[in-house]
Length: 191
Image (tube, rainbow, N blue to C red; front, side):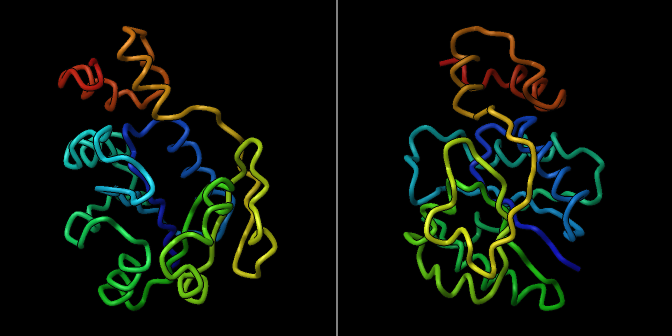
């Protein structure tokens, strides 16, 4: 089984994430996609993050009953900050029969050379790259382990959603319905 690992803060998860996961399942050889909720991305500030358990719950709300998608809290149990190489090593030990791949945007591919043990990651897994506006992929764009996926470019960000909520905008159609309901119920992102 080939599992695409879609790492992210998902602060919050939105329809762009979901559309991308759906596209990857339908137009690549990936059998399943795991949304790996990162407690702390070493390249992002931690202060702006909603608690990891709530972000995981939002991902679960977004996924619903889709058996091809999974919300993963694997990085909650590993040392922080989270490094992809550590997560991959752990997952490969736990699931030796699975073939893992990483899903990322072309913007992340451009900074991939800064990731801890990036050369080892490329030895272990393939990268499935989706396009991001004004990001061509950098020095690794033609690497043999890089698979370009011509997914639609969706210009929605979690930052946009957080800012909109804080500014009392109704953005209910930018997130899955159950995600919107949970955000409203818990009064997230209002300050």
